[in-house]
Amino acid sequence: MDRIKRLSFEVLTDHKTKFGEDFTENKKALNQVSIIRSKGLKNKVAGYITRFNKKQILNEQYKQDNVDSSNDEEQDSSLEIVDSEDISETVEEITLTNEEVETITSTAESVEEKSE
Image 1 (spheres, helix red, strand yellow):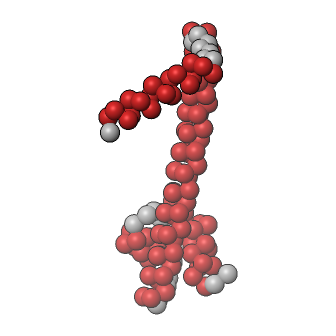
Image 2 (cartoon, one colour):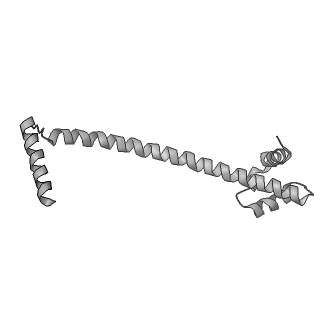
Image 3 (cartoon, one colour):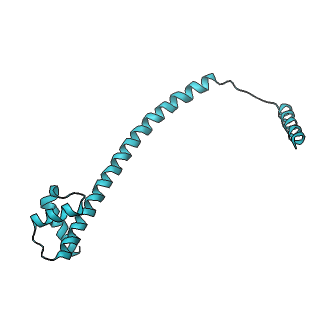
């Protein structure tokens, strides 16, 4: 593990509640809980903590959306089953013989020829 990650995780294990999604607020919190003399190193650590927190929040939202969508799908599937049962009871079966199909297609062809 590189130095930035190691330092970030050391700080986060003890003071996770002080850090959020805002980089400047994370820099201020980092100044309060640690002593990092290098400005560049401090910015990198604060930036890593910010990205890490944002990723965690996005992952939690993604998981919650998946849970919500799976609940919606379960409700939708139960509705679909009820609907399909109602439709099958009310729809009458229609059968056509070969002669009736040929008559319908020849009528459609003659209508198309007249319209051209």
